[in-house]
Length: 141
Image (cartoon, rainbow, N blue to C red; front, side):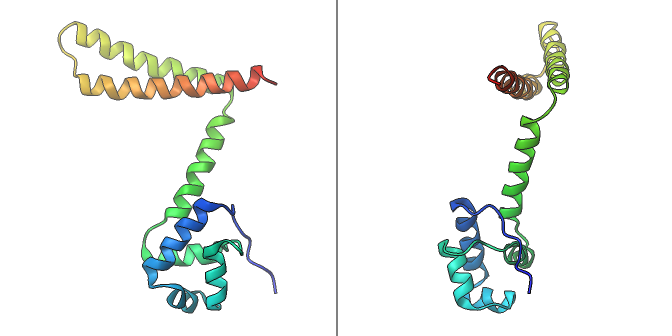
């Protein structure tokens, strides 16, 4: 019988999985849903056994909340952003700074909203930080 593929086995996954188990009604209820023993679920929660993908996915589906899937997706997105080609990051910085410049000129002429400006400034700062991080990574190679 093939074993389930496991995921990142760390305290964040265990904490989120433990909360899913509690929210579903406890170890016994989760084990019944998952078709496994209570000991398996208990060991997954306490960290002596990695959490199986099929286990956390089933609980997330039943509860209609996806904390582990969301965390894993965010890790994936952060990794992709960290590996983005330098040219793409540079283009994003130019585009975001262009948006900021447009709103600053509009505000100086008396017709700007500071709420839009604050949003665009945050996006420009985020783009610049990603570019800086990538440049520093490439310089350290």
